[in-house]
Length: 292
Length: 317
View (cartoon, each protein chain N blue to C red):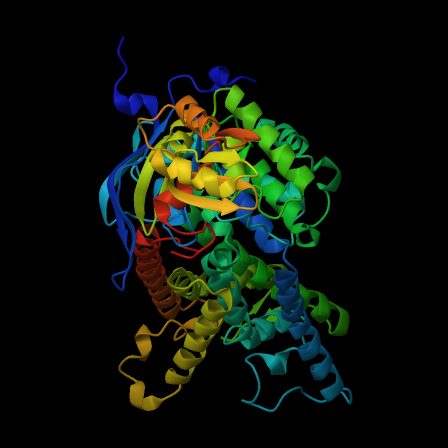
């Protein structure tokens, strides 16, 4: 192929669909890392641990759990394996899931800067806005994948160790197993949605440094700080603005009728965090000198 | 139709300046002109601002002041229009260790929005062939030697036909055979009409491959032009081989030759500009100085470089 064939009148014509190549490449890169597989492995192990623990605890046939103690719904797991999905999501949402997101999001830009691959992506040219969008989108894919890994692992363990059947909702109504499953899927969706705030926060932190480790540590550190702040009654006034504040509202999907208030508050708060921190990440990333 | 200067330039900068936070001036009012179709050697000691210049040309670093045009379009404004036509190797290769050589190229190609996914596999294969990495394409890049990484970085720059190649130290880490291969590759690409902008530590490499060169030191451009003109600007020294060195020195001094140095049976010095060399020889013979050899040593780019920077090549600026 000679130069003349290709470079007529300057730039090559590009199909808009080709723009998606970068997003696809991002997603494959995230999931081909050992680190990602290890994170997902840890997440998949949590329902196994919880399930086995509940099974051993209730070996004699008594009711599981000690009322009010342990993760939500744990007392219902022995009656219905599907509740292991809710229990596992409630157990992983405060720390395990957001930590995994923090690792992936924190490393997304900083890790590439550290390895030097960022400069080659940018001269390809990926385009700074396009690259940042692809990074964020692939992190969101990871949020969904991580949540589904917990949910599916919990469902499998629950089905193996406990009976399945009609689901008694928090409000006392019984729904069929099929509807329970649907509600479980919806809850997984809400949990994944709950993580978009910290994903944007991690992305922003990631644009601030050339060290992937520093960005991951900072993001996870922020998560822990905010989770602790959310526990102090003295900080009552600011708590509705902390991104994990409404996380456990997903339980409201297990009512009939569903209580939407906190679910919507959560969605709004996550959208706000995503918008603010993605904008901050964009402002920083599109203006910074890439010297690594 | 008369072309304007910027149309003929692959790279043109005007008063390009970069001052990093902390006040350090990395590049100081640089006026660089790289003609299209040239193989342009970019020389300078470490820390002279070459890499910062390249980063500004590639839109990675924003200039503090001044402007830069690459392939006729302003940078960093026209990054998306210009860079698909530019292949670059900047400050050595950077790869994804957990991906194979081939998958690394697929990833970099995916980042280019003008790259056709349907021809990706074929283009990646061709680029791997071109740098001699086809056999190792399935290995994880983590297991590559520095030379192999360098080749893979070059392959990434060759994924598309390019109008301009910016190669920062392309033979770094390669063995002599690999260096020769890369030089041949650069010549082939230049023969196809690609402009090659080559920064290198190795002066003889620049001299062998380049048609034009520029020299930077401490952030400033010292000179630029054709390699031949640069080398001839450092005048060659007169060299006389004779058993009668003391007589030769006396005669040459009388003829106005300065900076005379005697090493064994060789006398070297700077002949005055207006002087005809044949007259010098005649004067020597006339004074019964026995001359075994007489001539000027060809000035190398290195002489020009030392004359310009007043320092060795590897000294940090």
